Image 1: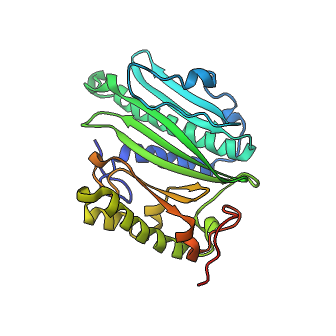
Image 2: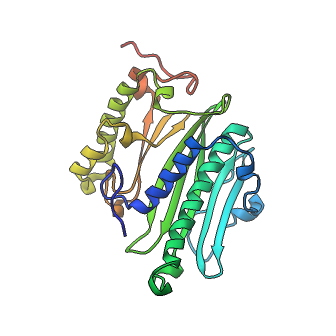
Image 3: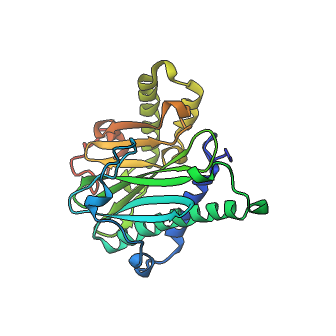
Length: 280
């Protein structure tokens, strides 16, 4: 199993590659309603979130005014895929999210097909346990902004599965995806503040399990280390990939950072109307 991620040592590359392909598809493809108009039939929201009492797998949350779409593939002896994504009733945003989700599903199926075409038609011994499950969380820092955080779990053999976290942030008025430069007047300052805050908080929450070298490298003020930010009414939730700041056994790490700690970077009122104004 591959174990190299493009910018974070230790991340398995297979799933990261799928998600990179999906993100490139979002950038390169024009908005095309037909891409998702014929999406796989999804169960009704009530059915799609029914808990399975036989296992402790997480279930997809339901949000007011949001339709939960679901891509389902596989079965009949093939690895299964279940990927939820939201429909927010904003044409450009919905098309972008659907392209992203479809790209993830297509890339996973391509990876599965490589196993189907293995030497002598033999499949890996773990093939019957392969699967991909994607769930999302939705946050609204203000009326015109939506923050969608995807957690995509997969298993394609090896000691344990993979997890990739992806945050997509949108201006619902324009339909445009938001990046760090849209969130802060001084994005470089924001990186410095997030780096210092994350280092302190991770040392506190991980305690004796903290790995100083992993934390130092994983929270360095580099945009790639802070590529996944969930926007909340209170500020930011900084999402770290497995192996970025802690070993797999510690689980994925996230750090909440209040707006007051980001004031010096100039949080944009478009996202946080209540943002404090720095005196610096």
